Image 1: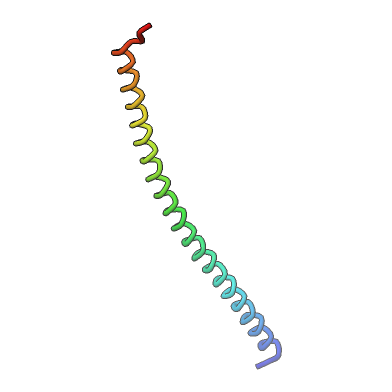
Image 2: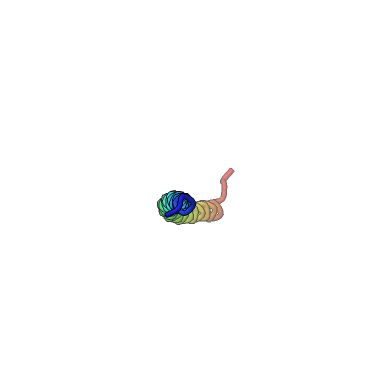
Length: 79
């Protein structure tokens, strides 16, 4: 094997090693993104439940307001 061939093989080996390292880094980034996506999904589910609770509470408050207004209409103020 000539010196040029040896150098070419070393360059190819170093390039492949760099590519493998970059692929490992990219894979780690993908894993992190998947974990974060899962957290976001969990947070979105919690937010959805909170919105439902708020809407239910809002509806109950409006019902109380309507009941109070009806009560005031039925029982006018006496002077």
